[in-house]
Amino acid sequence: MRPIAEHERRALREWHRTQYPRPRHAACIDWFERQFHHRVSQSTVSESLSNRYSYLDSPAPPRLSSKPTFKNRAGQWPLLEAILVDWQRNFEQRGGHTTGQVLIDKAREIWPKLPQYSQLSPPRFGNGWLARFKGRHNIRLYRQRYDFSNPEQDAAHDEEEDPIDRIIEAHLAKIQSSLEASEPRDHDQDGGPEDDDHDTVPVPPTPILAAPPPPPRNPMPPLAPTPTPSRVAPLSIPTREEALSAVKVLLRYLEHEETALYADVKCLTRLERSMEQGAVNTQI
Image (cartoon, rainbow, N blue to C red; front, side, top):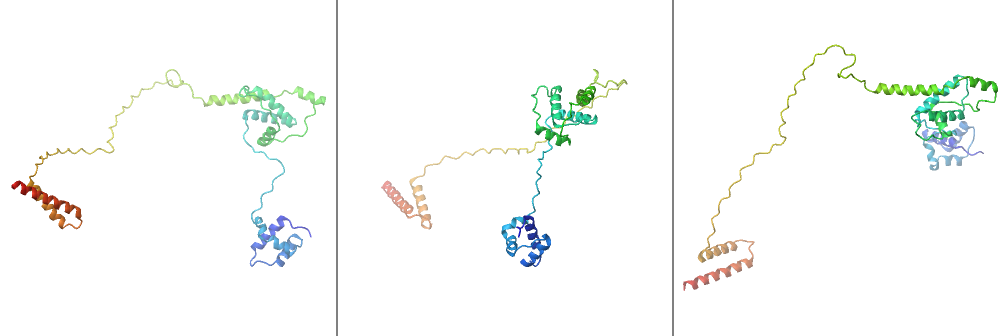
């Protein structure tokens, strides 16, 4: 009895989950045999439906290709690649067979001819750049290079002129024309267009009226006049009788005040007696 595969176990769990009521193990064994032409044991079905394989309930991840893939990012030297693509298409149209080494050699030949890259150190142009270049421009190459040992083939290539210089000049001229088109057109010394020959009537400038100043946002209220402080009459020194009378009034008030302290009442009582005794001594 062969072991159950992972995709078979996934299919079994999915079928069991979609059935209502849930089928027994015997029904699962029969379904598995009809589906995959292979009979499994009851223990295998029980193990496959357990939580041990719950991760199979999620969608299966996509299978990865064994071939290396490259992201089609923008090239670091777009002008060089555009010239190289045009040259490669021209070369194929003339019956040539482009290989990876041919493109690498041609890229190294183009680099010093471009003024935009002449001050930079030339890159290596290795196999990694070649693979990304082919992916960006959908180029298929031949596995073997041209057999230049054939005399007839060498003669045919010697007679044909390599159009790489013409392709480079065409791209540089296109860039120059784009720059000239983006620049603003010059005017004559009078300040008007060169082809403007008719007389123009000067239009007086429209006077610009000064706008009124905006009102203040939060105007301050007028300040109220500061009241002049009234003069306070100087206090006069009371006599002994007036002071004694005031002490007696305060004692009568404290006698009826619930929050009065005993010590305060006792102190005022002593003061009253002392003042009365002093008044008597003064009279004598």
